Length: 194
Image 1 (cartoon, rainbow, N blue to C red):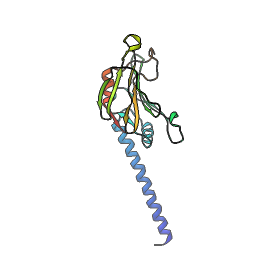
Image 2: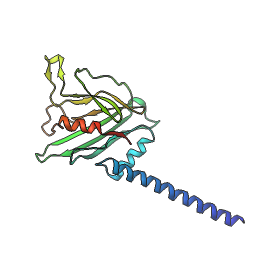
Image 3: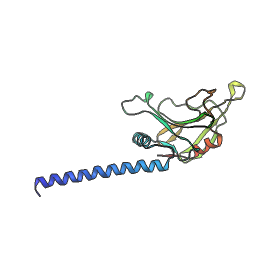
Image 4: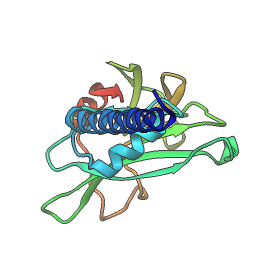
């Protein structure tokens, strides 16, 4: 085989490898979109890229109308651990005009427990999750914390996450509406690693 034929063969093999790699990535994106509802292609590409750096958990079940609203991401070796951020935000608009929104937030530094008692323990595919859904506040004579939905930190692989069920608003935000306890539990029980 002469040098020209060797070069042509090498280029042909290289182009086949690139095509196979692209098809493999495309298959992963399509499979992820099929497994996890409410996610557009560009978001799935971003989630798969994040998966190369950390574990990612996504819900396999969403209440009707929920879609991935956005991903806030600051990751990588060049980002100081205290500045890292990874938040997956889902939402839906109700016929009343209000929005329901929740987020799955990764934690990288300074994780602590919540200060409320009475968490409901849920068994999920990613492990046990402690859910606080409008818990009683000992500092306010046991008054229920309105519109407060959060979990303790739970591990997905080596990454800590928590669920924020009233994401992006204050306790009395008139534009947000609560997600029911039943739907919150179903979302959390459907979490699986990407």
